[in-house]
Length: 599
Image 1 (cartoon, rainbow, N blue to C red):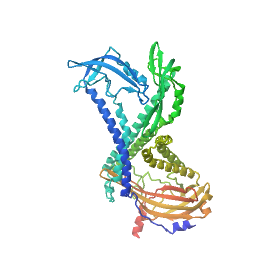
Image 2: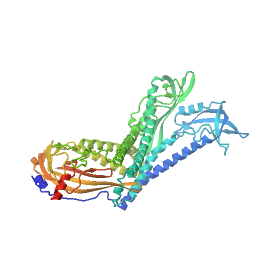
Image 3: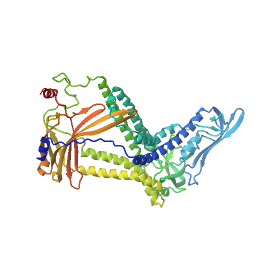
Image 4: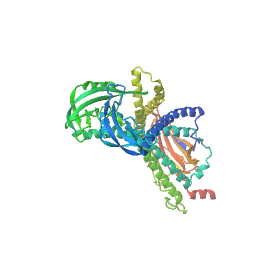
């Protein structure tokens, strides 16, 4: 067999190369401009949110004094179709400051306008007419006062734009950071002190993924969990007659298209007291699909008498429909951020734990060593398998794992892009021309299409022939013989050519300043088998002698020597078989080295 003769005659071809070549200046400039979009958007929204938080916080330092509420109520602007917050909480109150009387109608620094009538009514109900209340006065401008402070919970929303800031700033930094061709730093990076510094990197990684997790959790609670809890607790609410006073489709226009929402106002009585509500359902968000909202509005024309559900514990709370909207999948998108954030933090923490174990091994070299060999030195680490006799190798990955991974990546990417793509398509279908958003979204869509292509390729690989690779010993030794056997199952007749090669690669990780670099170099390549014979492709074996002057397998904290067998099967007009099998190669026994030296 060609493969056996090639392996026995030691016809090895050595190829030396290095990975990680820097991109050109043009590519860096293009990538920088792309990332500046993320950075600019993130900084813009972050600045806006920080400004609002500071404004809300400063009123907490204003003096609190008593005041008298003159009148309070809800002002309705339902006739204004361009007003998406038509319900205004109106409160007038009088207070005295340093002997002078002032009248104000400012409830808070933010205008107390709501899209939900119940929220406006609840706020007005906290300040009933002809009652005393507490207001907070600006000592530098006494005619400015508020009845309530702004919420500081909006500060949590800042985590969402910080994702864009982190992607933009981090991407630009890593695009332009200067690498080093010198590998002398790899020696110093082996010290325990360097590994301890690596924990800072783990902390940064945890913090980065924590932003994804917190942002996703916040949106998941507001958009899904809280409305779902409302559906559950409303099961005991009381059915009450009501009358529709206003109904329309509320339009929310934006640069990325328009979304729509059912806006109704109905009046009802409960325990002899009149009330109003504007809540149609608990999942109170706007979405695409105007026709579906118009059908709902036609079912609730002005003047129609129907039934609503009222909370007996708080009659100001009512709802027309307890149902879950059909486009509920839209509000589950934050789950992607939660999954990425949680998975990333778990990965970072596990990586940090492994680094801590390596620090312990460096501080205590005797820890983790194997039993002493015949010459008083450790034979091999427990991490190195010591099994003798034929053994079946396990591939580094399988077609099923590759398919599942590609599906997850494609679903994650296209799930996010599709949200914006739906709005773009809707805008074009309405005769509008959102050129900026279309051009901006085009590269994201192309990436998504290529990811879908990857899913198709990985799916086709599920039907490829499978190889079972066996070697004579789980721990081959440099300078020793390696007997290799293989068996293909499945549609083996589709294979036109089989190639099996043995490769070795060195990986060196080192630090330069606060940055960590990894250099990879393939220092050995040997073709063991190359055959077109159908019978030899299905079942075969070969014998090779490993060179004695190379480096064995190594798994140190910052240096790795990785050996593996690569199997490639060529299939016409179909994804090829391409499997890799990690291999642990041991050093030449010490007594063999001594014998050769004496000779």
